[in-house]
Image 1: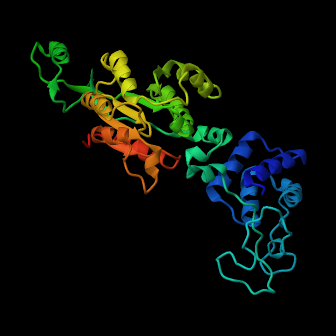
Image 2: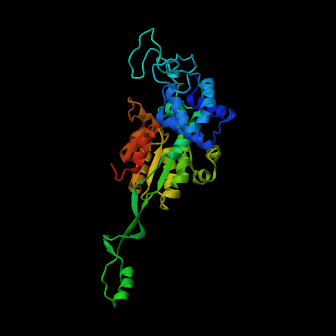
Image 3: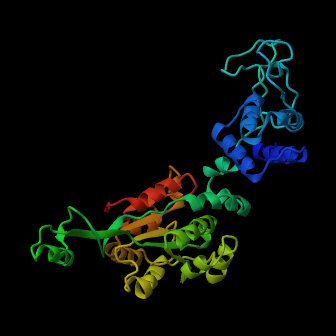
Length: 382
């Protein structure tokens, strides 16, 4: 079934072949108008194209010829409704990809008599691929479908709560007096401070640290999450790690790689892809090599895992308890929680749950809203 974006692309190309100057700027306006207006009939589609693609009345005649050739529906100069020759009242030809179930129904949704003519011709189906993929589980998407979501993931803002820093900014009602600026200003008044200059700490976003499980049970979701984290590592300077049987820091790889080969380089940098899972050992490695140096202090730590662990649950509970005392928030992303029948019966997940501030699914593009909201929450929930 042909999609409206494909037909729109062939339509603008045909207009250019017919001698109508349709540049990239007009094509972008046409595509944006289709997205915002979502025309449901050929009449609405024609009006949308006339408003965005043409620059003079002399172009209407060749435009209508191309419109009839590409979309197969009626097009032409409008006559008063009900008069003979009204193009919008002529019965449309059958076009592959028309929206089913519209024959016999008027524009306002009322049924038409069987012998009556159809007022307006429906346009080809205008469902965007992103609309269809937004609610689908990441595990059900192919590599090509995941690539379609890359542009949308780049628009997601992974915002963490603000924290005060050592830098300061001037504030008229600040809690502390800026002695240096006050004394400097008092020189103009013979040493008498007529005005107290104040300041407050300049806030800055908290650091974001992400540890993503790439074991065999998490492989379908790990690719999607790493694609999202690629955007986060470049936009918010997040620290990204992967773990299965060992811990691997991917931040330098994701920051240097381009969008096309980021996942390929990440796969080569993490040799334990699709292996077993030792969450407690990997958290201990993170704590010894990075956490004690200050990377996790006051940061928002995200763990992407389904909780399957080959180690002892008590070891994982010990590591999670230490991490929760150091970090500002601990957010656990478990795609299995999307099921309404989910229960934290896995020993690893049950051991880690008391030390998590939020548990979200993150199993689809639509579910990432809960993930971003959990990151920006200002307070702990434990």
